[in-house]
Image 1 (cartoon, rainbow, N blue to C red):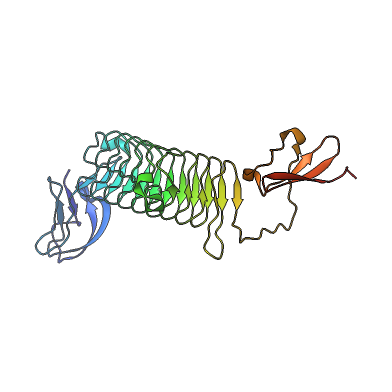
Image 2 (image 1 turned 180 degrees about the vertical axis):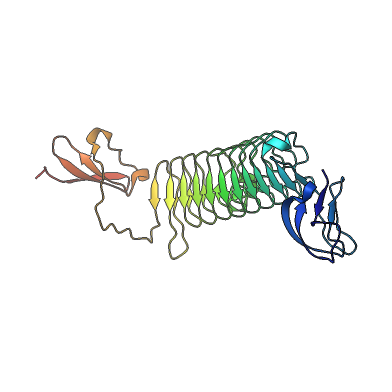
Length: 311
């Protein structure tokens, strides 16, 4: 079907505002300047003839009546069923390798360029999700976000190099991990080991363990289930390398609780032995019956403060 910019073969020039198909139906608004013949022809080689002196250069436009839409050199080149795949690719090589993948949106040079059968992903930015092949339901917003992901699914990255070059190191980028959420420039894993179910928020916030969370610029949770939150006035960020430890702030922070703080008692038989790794820990001991004590760990030892009985 021939496609034309403009609405007819005559006129005195001015704005060409639509890409039109047979019968004059408007397909895409483009807003370019025309010449004395108010028509722009989309040729069979994928180029658009714009008339003498027109600077418009569009390498490729593929529009199907009820399916995929591609704009850009080599965008969607390999797609086998563009009429039903419902993809959108805008930019050079966007979704270039896609064959049967459906429901994805790629905006930017090489966005989702290697995707073949992956579905329902969004890549917005240069090289966003560039290496993704079969990963599903990923979102990358920002240049190079999730650039090296291949088969990982359900990941979300927002910010330049998020989940691609964490801490500025591309070798630690996400490739196969699942369910990662990253918000901030160069956020992600602090090693090349792929970690699932992580959350990182803040410039270069990093984790190195499954189910870990780091919130705050430079925050680091370096163990499974660890949580690190905050950054103090001196620029020191919260950091922990202990499994399941919740690090709230730094040594410079003061934590104020205006309401109540609930701490579950620990049976005497379950109390950790005194050791350097336990230093600074405070527990409430359930000594049986209605007896409760406070246990303090310091210097590799543990100390009991008798709390008495219920009243």
